[in-house]
Image (cartoon, rainbow, N blue to C red; front, side, top):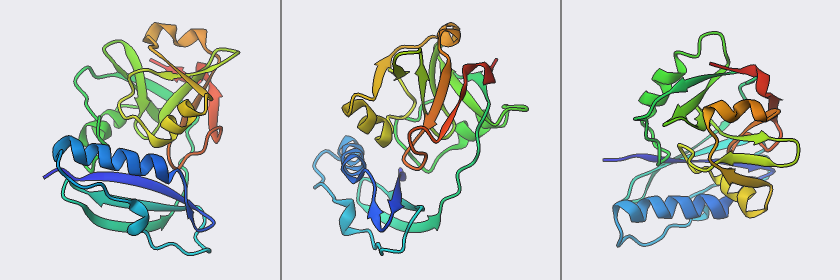
Length: 197
């Protein structure tokens, strides 16, 4: 049985970006079980006003939610990436099975994380979606490994534009940002020069 995850940031007792988490959770469940009734994550969360910078991890299957846990979130610093190629990796659904991602992460050598290249196109790091700055606009890969909830929000707000970005086009950008449900927009940014083969 598949097990999937939603990772939700809790700030001042509030679940951030819940609309996008609910949408993705229900899209995943409907993919595997089209007749299932939608769920609302707020019915399963137990939040208090003193919860701040907390990571809420929701594990679920097509049948429903199986586990909800909370922990303090500590952002891992990332200032450099190594590009690694995998044309077979598939992480379309945020799941508990991260074996392929973890094995790619192991070949990062002296870099903090990896930037996965699939079929010649940039995708994601092992933990986050990416955006690249060309001096005017921020672009995110059209075909990420995972369509993150923060990515969906930033696209809807017009902060990001989607674009196919070839590996060899990386040098035409000046900066890279990493972001996900827990890593806020602008929290991790460094020069593209810090990304190497």
